Image (cartoon, rainbow, N blue to C red; front, side, top):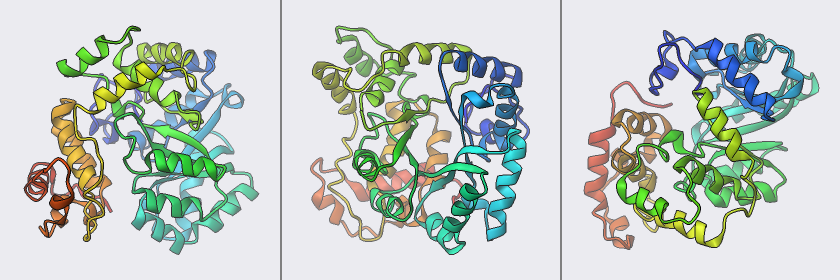
Length: 366
């Protein structure tokens, strides 16, 4: 999703702009270097770089296809009828210049999308493509709460799932509970956003950098973030979106030491200190009777300040990842959440501020 773009831009909007071209020459160099260093899992999707990601990856894997596990995703929100599934997959195979996929994922499942997919008999489609050889294994990527995650896990004989997981989002979406549950059901777990799209790495507030500097072993914020995910034995694969050769080289080097149980208790306590700079995400305020995802709303808003993130990024997440009932605007001001909050946060007023700040007309998810 974060391949280098011609002209050097890496804004979230540009990565989905059909007028922005992938720097294919640099992409191919990066991928060939990565494969040479042992990287063997490549993840893309129909929507990444407005369709150009799959094309660029297909070119890069010429002569290397047999060395890698190739994964892409069905754009579930663009499918309106059963026939769309075959149309999308066949187009993706052509883009990637291959006659089969190692892994085919349902992209970004949420409650509404999952209901829609079941109505269109997507599970029969998954059976079919494994039988006819277009996909060796199937799975799903996920962006919703852990309850719907467990429902999806239990609904089919999946090979793997893909979840957002990092030290800041340990209890967000599927979170640690979902990670443990998936593994208990025999699924491999692919972790996306181990560095929160780079927000855990730069720019770093002074108070957080001071905590990192207190460690005996000095590491970059990227290394701390990746090592935290790799420290979990339940994690099968960690995805890192890399936009430059220097990032590929750094991540390959870090991966050599990124093993389960490789961080000491003292090092894990340092990471805990960093997490506590912001809201702990305790979720005592949940569940909300109208469905508002209070921790997620505040997390997206706080990102603009804690990680110095551009409002554009948080706005995209707020408008496109949260369902209508989960958005701050669905608050009916009953006040029950405020009675439960151990931090005595004025949640009702806070949710109004979140919506006023992050709502964008015309940028609504399905």
